[in-house]
Image (cartoon, rainbow, N blue to C red):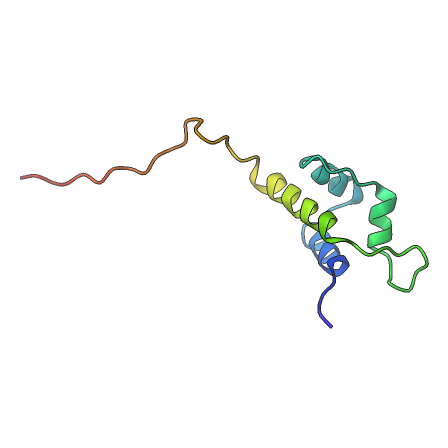
Length: 92
């Protein structure tokens, strides 16, 4: 059996040394609200009665927020975007 969304979420949390507060803030970067109690349910053991499966939407929003958290927001299109440098030919 492959990795579940919960497994991926747990591994990212450990790899980036994130706490529940950090994950909540990261999700708010993409206007997605998640509570600490929901996060606790995702990180529980599968046999625990309060365990909850992490859906695709939750993981997708977390990943999009993590990108913004690590790289910063994307610049708006057409707003002074750098262009490729032109190639100059040497003339003798």
